[in-house]
Image (cartoon, rainbow, N blue to C red; front, top):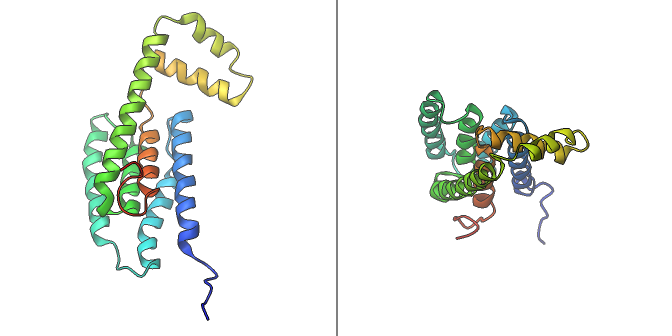
Length: 186
């Protein structure tokens, strides 16, 4: 007779990681802040999942995530990357594992490129569109999506930073969505 597992950690862990990545992307887009709670949750999942699966402690992935953290801290020190992005990228690398680091980096770079192109196109469209920005700000108090759109239009028009946490979350989601190793689109 087969035994039925009452609790399968994987059945909860991957949806939890997906929700955490969505939370990080949404907060980065809306407030330009990535909550530390997201990075902590992803780090705990990255350390605990291999142990739940009966694998040894992920020392290599931990070392890779720590190395990535230190390298990205240098970029943060130069003002090229936000602190939340540094923590999120390292936590995602720990979660996906060193085996899928190249897939994660590729997916994140592609998502970041698409996001940057969208922001460039938005800037080209909005740089001389003062009346449109004023209308968005005036009617922005009506609903959350319109307020977010108005704030983002203002950020794009004034050349503020691109919310790279969105690209990191997309890269993480694409990598996690394919359990066979590569990113989902490989």
